[in-house]
Image (cartoon, rainbow, N blue to C red; front, side, top):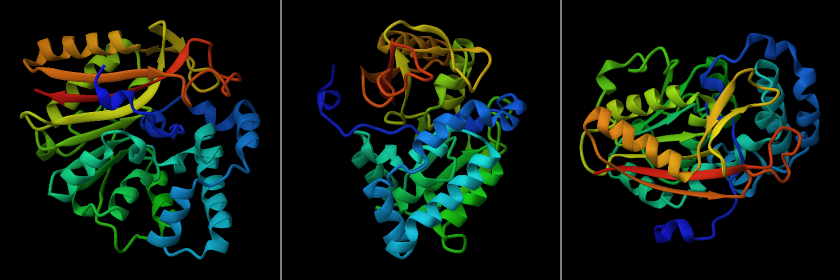
Length: 302
């Protein structure tokens, strides 16, 4: 295992990620009873210090107004899609900035490289990049639920200033994201809580799509985190998805990328680790299983 994955890092908090990139059964909107308990448990969750700093210093929201402002947006988002990660305020964890590769990614974007987030939700990760010095015109966010993008502007009060390109697209149906000119033009793609929302075959196809979007040169990068397991296989995403979805361990994730490489004529270095941080079973017993873990990864083109 590479040294950077041995570092002790702060626990990530789940965010909505690509849940919003797929149309879960529409009846989920009418079944808030299923997620209401989870929502109430996190309804008064603490706003992370990093998110508070972003809202106060980037968005210029007075400190005394931050909580009311956040809760208002959270409630509106939850009414659109009753995702527990919205109810828990976990979308404010700013997980990208906690990834061991974040300093490198930030520097690359500062130097003019392009960055795209799949399943951007409110665009909070992109705002963190901008706050940390990345030019917003190098950033892209893909989101199926356009209302989330609109709420992001309201949350961060930057409609006139932000130059991020937001794309409303379903990557399963639109591999080029509605922008053919992006094919082969992206340097970094971030996919948090993304692959685990698909079957094994769908993940394989989506990984090939990621390859087609990244620049065909050494150093192009996919990074992220998601639900993993010590026993790779199909698992139901209880209360949110009716069918079974595939979860990886480190070996199965690497194997998938070996298959992707052979299919696309490319080669990839996969760095990955499995741990018991926030996507483990403890603390998530109402919907998780005992074998669940977090898988953290960075996939580099060779």
